[in-house]
Length: 278
Ligand code: KIV
Image 1 (cartoon, rainbow, N blue to C red):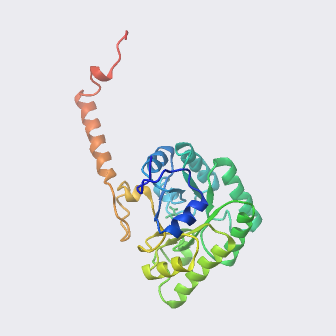
Image 2: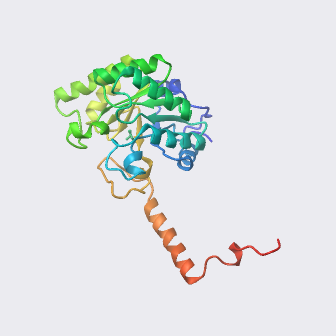
Image 3: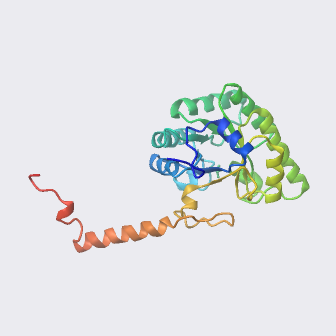
């Protein structure tokens, strides 16, 4: 399989993403939660698979990412790793697995790495506690992706899923957090729901790549939740989202045909049945 720029593809590493930023090649990331999607996304040229804690809403039907547990993340990340052994896979550390203390953050990140075989972990926020935890995890040799702007694990403190970084003070805070995450050793930072001009400023200020979601075109890469981008999750339609396929319609159409054919007796036909002898 070759990437869209048709260079041969080895396994991506943290160095690949730095090089992509330096060369101005956009990094394409997508969420994956199971082995089949992981395989399809990797085969289609996605550079980085994120096992997001959006798992909670997208797959488990939970109201937010807050109830997602490390056990659930490990279960799904291990499946993603099995589906795409050569992909660069990032596991999103769930709520309260890295905020309590740096030692606990390292223990949990280490467990995530050991039990799944992922390549990196992701944490949300750029405050002092998270930055300290990042430093501890990175010191142990585990690559960490940061995440600033709209950080869904803090949805209650932020007052909803709103664009962040509007106004000079809020913008300054986002920039400071991103710089602190870089200084602590993050290999990249997700920028979520930010004004495009702020994302540009942050991207220019950092030497590590920024991966945007709802953060405009000037990030070093983009990430989307696969089920949203492929039109499986029709109820989620934020302004930043583009649907690149209409899978919900395809699913309904295929399932309706199956229902009709079973009811009419058209399926299974002789072609789909076995006889006593071959
Ligand atoms: O959990 C997730 O899917 C994420 C992405 C939206 C970046 O954190």
